[in-house]
Image (tube, rainbow, N blue to C red):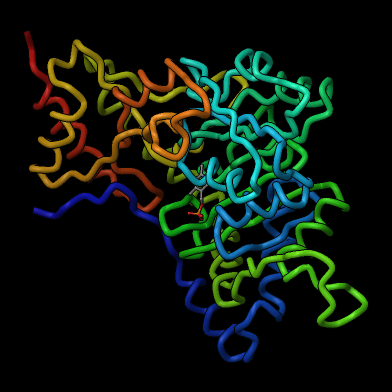
Length: 367
Ligand SMILES: *Cc1c(COP(=O)(O)O)cnc(C)c1O
């Protein structure tokens, strides 16, 4: 029996063509046309003016915080339910993460919780578009304006998702993407900072490249980083971005198949899609409730025994040893206990989705 992996990316023949073109051009470092092309095309895709490609999404987050001037003593508010990289980037910037709860319906940052945690030291808010669904940005934009805060989007899981008809990545002051192997748009490893603020873009680009003075070679006025992306990987990104609509359509089609295939199976809650959003369903994420008759962990083990790979939801940040003292979030804890990601990705076939649905129906325990 073929194992169904938790994520099946979609790749095209164009990838091979562009990578070969890149190799043959001799421009394989971060110099050369593919990196600039990828930055231009991807920032346009997000509706933003500038893109700064990086070696991964975590570096993009750190670079965004550094470009925004976030430093020791500053507080950065972020949601309890996200991948650890969001919080680690705040730690790299020597700032203090302030972990707050998420909304029970959207599973993303709760604007009221953010409001309650703003102090005179708050410098930035990071909204995470979790599992493909955008955070509710309007109230966060208002809070940021009212209190003079940077609004950063962690869009690593939501390339192409829209909030009120606008693509994520172009809504906050600055946004960060990941192009890791299992993300919707992938270069294997990679990331990008996206912004329409020319000064932020200039600083992000400066720090990405060892903070070297623009006019004086090997003169460095601050401690910078090497967070550059290789041209070979940018070539992969350029190729896949040309088929981004196909990738998003396929990912959304997988979600439709799950919705139809599982229907109103008792004890399974489907992922949200608010009226103001399009979810790109990076991972088809469900909640397992008491009426399923089995716990989430029991279900995951049984699926694994049947060759179906799943993932539990993230452990809430404040339940991780480095962040024990950094906040709380009861809603995030409940979601984290009940949530799991089913096999997903634009490369997943109808046949395999149907096998997952059938297996889930068989595993439900009638009382
Ligand atoms: C994947 C991811 C990152 C980090 O990206 P890498 O490219 O793996 O460094 C950051 N934030 C979120 C929400 C992610 O899912």
